[in-house]
Figure 1 (tube, rainbow, N blue to C red):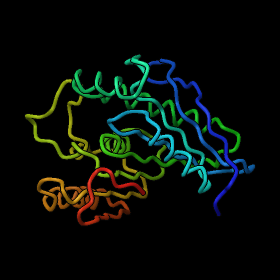
Figure 2 (cartoon, rainbow, N blue to C red):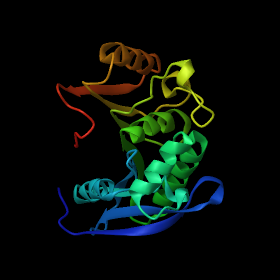
Figure 3 (spheres, rainbow, N blue to C red):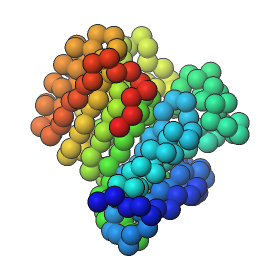
Length: 219
């Protein structure tokens, strides 16, 4: 049942290696307990669209936290921060996963949280969701929305992003959704590879696609 009343605010959390970073927290005003969601913003940054999505999740009964993964760029706005990250070669995977672990820990500390944590991300955030699902403990469900770079040839790997998430053979949450944009090059092969790896891990999953959709698609 949707909650017409909600509260949203910027909070400070412990990120990778104890760094203090901003995060956007939105939750229903009801007493709860509420399931938790960590929202990974897209490459354009910790922008109003990402915060709107957090509020939509709160409206639908979730406590949602979205860490500012570009916080350390210190440029003052999401566009400049995003450009700075692009010029540096993307987000360092190790740092991103540390920030996500901090967001999960913060969510679990909240008195109205019910103990369950899911993750969702869009675009580059979808890739980070897939990576977190394979490497971070304590995740109950994952939703990768058209994450680029999940399948990545060796020549495109970098020091900041040294591994293709699909090639990591570790943990995976009990439930998974993967959304693929139909304009992605070589979509059929990519979907087949992702499905095969998920089946190999004996996990429940769903794949969805919308013909003609691109990265502006929103849930």
